Length: 185
Image (cartoon, rainbow, N blue to C red; front, top):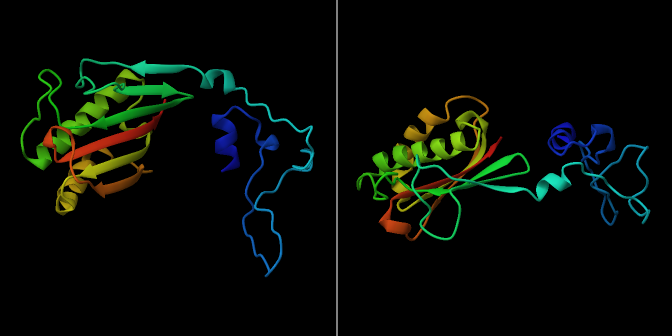
């Protein structure tokens, strides 16, 4: 874990504070959940500073715009590139050219929403294999099995993205599904 974090933030792994493998606190004992290499000064040392070479890059927020996905329905971007991540806004099953739902069928809306996400990912320099997290919002959780089957066609290679799925009260345009994604550039 320390190596991945260090790598994405461009910090040498030897300077990263990492979690211990096991913590067995006793009753009433104070336990530190972090360990540090001996080359790093104590956390209590007020003179300690961390350098993140990527901090200047964190200020660069690049919007993603493509005509191969529907325009945003409000004051937000189709996607954003920030600090080597792509954040794809929630995507409905809208036809890019018309901005209307592809149909009333949850399966067709799911495929179209995933195609729209793919177009935004490609416009940002990534693809489905770079996705690390998705969130699915369903108007009816009874549609979960069908959505899962279609979703598996787009995310077929391991490691699969982390995912959360929720039933929501309502979605824009009375859609049956909305999906957002986070990917690595």
